[in-house]
Image 1 (cartoon, rainbow, N blue to C red):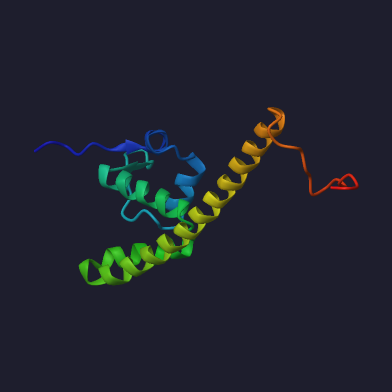
Image 2: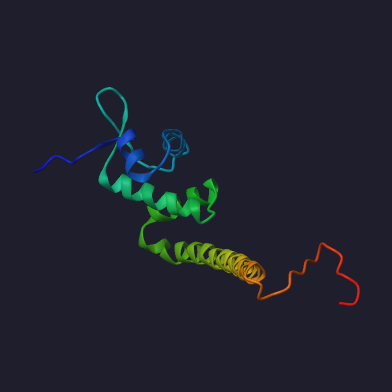
Length: 139
């Protein structure tokens, strides 16, 4: 039987683009269950641990708090019976991300319109008008 490959904290950090402090924090917060230790008592991670941490990183980017991550972890540890509750948690986060995406798209649209306006002004196709400067009389 092949021995399971284990990864050091630094290897995990490099793989996930995570700081050492963040990984240590997640471990200390109990977000990485059953972390093994090597003979020097340093944390080592299995491939499954690395994939779990990859998921935590995504959940953090989705706006999930540490407490929500703990709740999600607890549900995951319960097994398939908790899938509906996990799906509900993820659906709520997805909804918020869709709202953020719409806000970001609106901002991009504004910037694109301003850039087009400025291009037209610089090319002489449009007269410059500003909401901040008084307009000349007779206009």
